[in-house]
Length: 120
Image 1 (cartoon, rainbow, N blue to C red):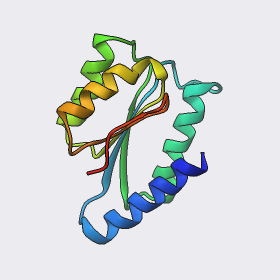
Image 2 (image 1 turned 90 degrees about the horizontal axis):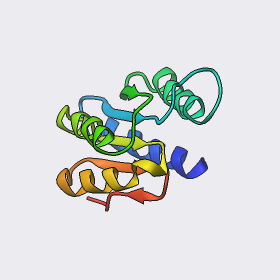
Image 3 (image 1 turned 180 degrees about the horizontal axis):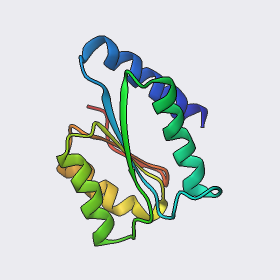
């Protein structure tokens, strides 16, 4: 978690100096956000970013995202909408995340299952 926090702080600090508009962050969760569990914990981090960096970030999320073609469609939708960083919070999204990273090289992709796009 410290790595992710450091990454976001670096990106948000850089973007506030370079960009006039907020960084757009999308989060894809495999299960309902609910009140406990994997997706809830990730969404808690997303809400933290919104609360403390509201002038620097714009976030959105999709929960209950199925694996396979449907997850690829959701990932692609966020990339086409201009989101700068897309977090996919399941190793089951790794293949689709990797495919999207090749198709959208200017978007940063972070898969919690160990897949990340190469640096720009």
